[in-house]
Length: 83
Image 1 (tube, one colour):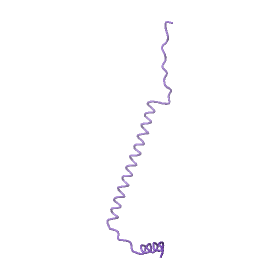
Image 2: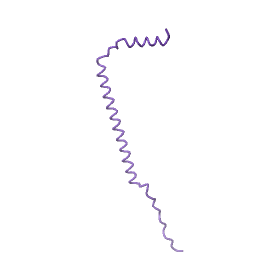
Image 3: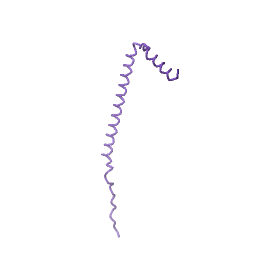
Image 4: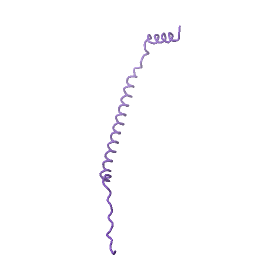
């Protein structure tokens, strides 16, 4: 019997045996963990959106106050007298 035949026979034996019993509290634990992960992800997403909104609002306020697109005011020299 070759190695491949032995592996196939091992897989057949594994598939023919009944699955092991599942503990009854496993479903409740999985649901509890899933709900917790869902709440954590939703909270992280809300925090991300709030941070992004605050960054955009801060950028808009900075742009409105500093107006970086406007040309800088050129100071005018005083008139020369006494030439």
